[in-house]
Length: 242
Image 1 (cartoon, rainbow, N blue to C red):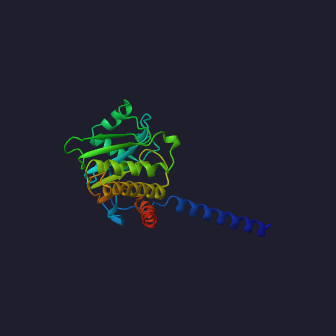
Image 2: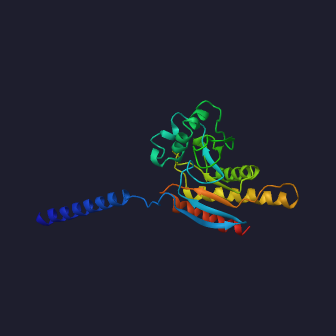
């Protein structure tokens, strides 16, 4: 009887130890990168792909690109979205004094897949002089493959506008979508490279006179910087082989 009781107590102690360990490992904070950190993940076709921990309202670039889904009430402020202090779309909305939400809520910009609208922010409201919104469509139908086309649109519009650099924010997690960070970041790079190569073809055949795209700042939150960087590096290695 004593041996049975002793055996039961040992099993209970082990179970409690395992539970405590599981709780400790699952609640451990994710590694974060300081705001303002930048790193060149690689260069392809003369374009530096630079990771930057910064929000879209603060990134210092000639053009800021941000992505939004079709509007649902309070989407960027929902419990599923990132907290306000880390949410780039919330900061962008604040910089524009609520006009990002108003544009979407009133249907002036509906956010359909690959729909675009170009905004000139009020002086001093954000670092970039121009803001390009790109629609992501229905959030319930989102797939990472879309981001290749989004990257293409961003680069083509940037070159059409005559800028030599732009900052890109996918803003998926800001909108409450739990997306695969590395794959999304890599697909954006793939789209940018494809658009640039198409533009180079046009230049070679004297069908375009756009400026050379030199830098792309790929924005990421503090908790996603390294993961995004891995996807960017992999994509650069892949496209260099083509």
